[in-house]
Length: 223
Length: 199
Ligand code: HEM
Ligand code: FES
Image (cartoon, rainbow over all chains, first blue to last red):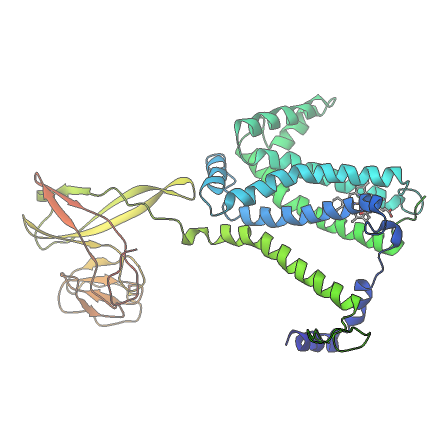
């Protein structure tokens, strides 16, 4: 049944061969942890990607209950954690995943760095990688405010006030980031929009580029 | 290319009946593991999504005062409206509530839920011959009546259906008179079915 649907689609789009080729892509011996246990370091990028998938899914499902308003944000997150069926697990995966992503990204970067894998011709992917890192840190910073706890509020208060120290334009930048002089509803909505809209879009596009480049260039040889 | 395992044959030859290629085995293993991992991830996600199905509804305050009995005139339905506060999704929110009060006598009151039994529109009291808009230009009865503007549902003073699609009479609510004051206990009922089922 599924096979016949696939065949019918393939008849029109001829994608079977491309997909077959991708699935047949050999895992080189030097990156295969089954052949060389020390090759597990090559898994760090993939593990990061896996956690990111988890973050997308858990975030998406929390979006069903989360209310981005100062009056309701805290209560709605408490509701997810205490009342929604298995909501504690969804929220917990998102919470711990946020830390795990940063840890794994750093390990991945270290792997790339110590293998010298950033060198010609892979400089471009290093640059894309740095952008990915910045986006992930952006997720962390904006996501921290969303539960609207005392800790969120004051961490964001401190974190955003740093920008006011930029010479000349600091005050303007601060207002821009906070959506006003103080942290309030505009700040929460800005951070929310960035967290669930702007950043995910950028992340998906850049991840696409990152993976495309890896496939095109192949993973670097042992040095 | 199905799995070809035969338990009785001991020998495995490439291409033989109980031969399964390494490649085939690995692709089945990958699909199988993938399915297990996906199911593990999907469980809390879907669980959270269907959570409303298992949440219990909390009863509203049992009795609600509607006014003094002399506030109502016999034979003249009066609507009483208020807002109620309820906890929904962890958030206190307000919801509009309304009931129609029909007084027959100082000790004989009927209270109707203010939602039409067809599809929950709000209906109103119309006097005989009063001109008003209708949904389908249906003929109005030759007496005072309740009229639902959504699909021309018509009820009489006792809540019985006089016309239109409503499948059952208006829903009555419990009534209590205490110390010259009228009370009701608000609740909602399923729309569109002949039976009166509380939700
Ligand atoms: C969102 C975060 C990221 C994900 C999901 C990701 C994923 C991957 C994956 C799956 C690979 C294949 C090889 C491997 O896994 O080691 C890879 C390669 C690579 N990544 Fe990342 N990466 C991320 C962030 C970064 C960062 C922050 C950098 C550096 C600044 C970076 C630089 C590179 C480079 C240069 C390669 C090619 C390595 C080689 O050919 O040996 N990536 N990435
Ligand atoms: S909702 Fe009242 S008639 Fe349809």
